[in-house]
Structure formats: C-alpha cells, structure tokens
Amino acid sequence: MASNSFTTAILVDQPPMAAFDAINRPRNWWGKEIEGRTDRLGEEWTYRYKDMHVSKQRTTEFVPGRRVVWHVIDAQMNFLKDKSEWKNTDLIFDIARKGDKTEIRFTHAGLVPEVECFDVCTNAWTGLIADSLKGLIESEQGLPDTVE
Image (cartoon, rainbow, N blue to C red; front, side):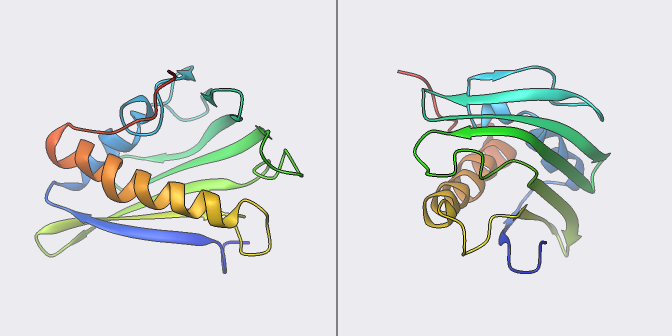
C-alpha cells in the first residue's frame, strides 16, 4: 500500500529521541483540537479541525527514537466526496540518524495520487512536517492549526 503513497522527509539538528518526543506531541505541531493520549502504544485519539475534518487514530507502533505509526481507524473529511477516504490508512514516522542530523521520513500510507484528497492533503502534510514539526523539534515553535 505504501509504494506510491505520499512521503516527505526532513533533516533536523536534534537527536532522534527529541524528534520522537516532538512527533508524539501532535497538539504542538498538527492541531490543538486533539482528544486523547497520543504518547503510548495502543492509545486511541481524535484530531478535529472545525467541521471539515475529524479522524480517529490508534498508535500501532511506538519504538522510542525510531518509529511511530498511527492507524486511522475512522475519518470524516467533509470537503471530499468519499468522506471516509483516510479510513484504514497509516501515518508513519521513521526516524534515523544521518551523520550529525536526524532524518524524519513521514509516509501517509494510502494517500495515493488516485484519491481525491491527494493534492490538498499532500500540501497540508508538507507544510506540517517541513515547517510545524521541524520548528517544534528544533526550537519548540510548532505551528499547529487552531480553531478560530
């Protein structure tokens, strides 16, 4: 499923555990409207953005300093024809040391060019990972969405 799924990568000037810890604080880089615990294997939590997007994730892999996987167990994307397009996809963060930096490779397994959300969602993920998550990791300055 992940072969042509959206992937992006960033390099940060912090050790792998700092990246891992930041990823697991999505309220500080993805969105403020998150309910539930996000920092432990097996936990289920919900992300919400206005009346446009709500998704429920389960943390299915949690390997400190190396990997985090959130499985989307339910989704409601009100701006799409298929409102459940994210359901049964995976949000994957692979973390590895690269020289004196840390690489975070993000893959949204199941977000492929054939789905309606591909353009909008890849643009959103690119900004969230390259700007918000990177800012949180390097300077504690994430840019999560907020409800107005």
